Structures are given as structure tokens and as C-alpha cells.
Length: 76
Image 1 (cartoon, rainbow, N blue to C red):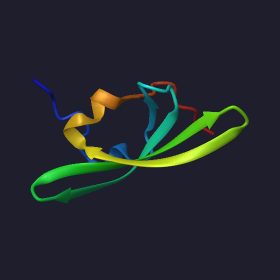
Image 2: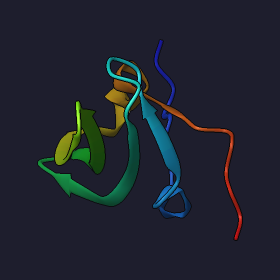
Image 3: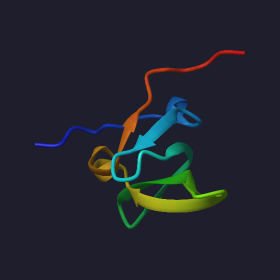
Image 4: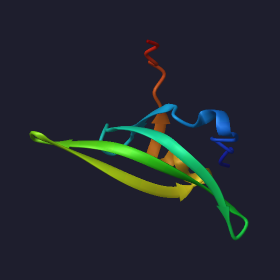
């Protein structure tokens, strides 16, 4: 059974890692639509010498299927 992996707004800008590509990502917003909570994620994908930014929207309940939280936060 899946847990509610992202349960509140204090996860915005938390560093994520895409499980499929290893790309860096971060949560940029949450919203509800038709009784389902969603999260919008900004990913930075590198391909050769080029970087792409990709926005991905997924149900909050599915986030752990695609991403994990990066535990190595850098504080400046």
C-alpha cells in the first residue's frame, strides 16, 4: 500500500532525483483537481552538451514511483 509520500507544502523546492534518468528535479507546486492532489515538478535533463528543463505533473500518490528525495542538501 502506498503512503502519502508528499503530504505538505514544506516540500516545495526539495531536491529530487528522477529514478529513470538520474536527473535533478524539484517540486515547484501542488494543486488539487477533481479530488486528486497533484504535484508539478521541474526537471533538468542533460543530453551531451545540452540541458533541458522539463515540467512534469503527476498525482502526489505516484511520486515515489518516479522520484526520490535527494538527501544531500547543500546549504549556502
